[in-house]
Length: 364
Image (cartoon, rainbow, N blue to C red; front, top):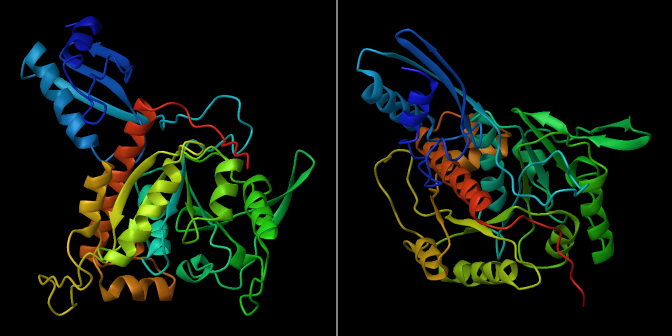
């Protein structure tokens, strides 16, 4: 068996999400054939790829079918996180994917979803930042247990930059880290827009695979400022199953689908899908209705990223500064991990199938 035989074998292995074989996608590197041993590297589209073991098994099977069942197959993995940003954009140039987490209304758990999505991505091996863009109601300092801490300033290429805090393996910035939490943020629209631009241009984010942005509820100035400042890879819509939340989620979907904005929807996640009491872990009570988010995703033909339960541990973890992805709640951790895996796959498919993201130019 030689390198060409290995390529022929791996040409039969499909990347599960992208629908093409590994060789065509240029994902196979560093093939070494040494007697009865074959080794090679698969370049994944993200370090947090949830299908890594499936790809490994398929590769081993394909090579053994070509060379014999006794051949030793060593599959290594590396990652080059996919990105579909337009070339030459100087804004957040080291960030490969910018993900806005949005909701049409408050109270649906958007910040909880943002925090645990970021943590799940980081636990998969990705470099992740989390920007709390909810200027009027910043909650990340509480959820990450960093209340009262202040970010440092450094000089980079002659410019003063804010250094994000680092907690649980991710970089974090929030207006709650810069102002006294006892003081209300009473700002007009232009001041809020200026703060968002500062979070983008004056924060030293460095190289990231994903920057998750926790947006404020609704559709307004901050959302427009964001898409006019950075090339947003896509938006994750958060809703609960109830009709009131679904009606507002439709507005968020419609906003990003407008002709002058055109930010792709990565998918929709249904939070508080059911209530599970701690003492009855196998019970599900559909307090806010059932499958409303799933039906909405089907209606608008956007990816459905999963259901997240309403359990006491999620609330307790957020209040204690230990998000559920850092805790021991198996049910909730699995739900958020499955959701993050679905989001990763949807982002990879978005980058493979859709046009590059560009900064939006809106003229009124």
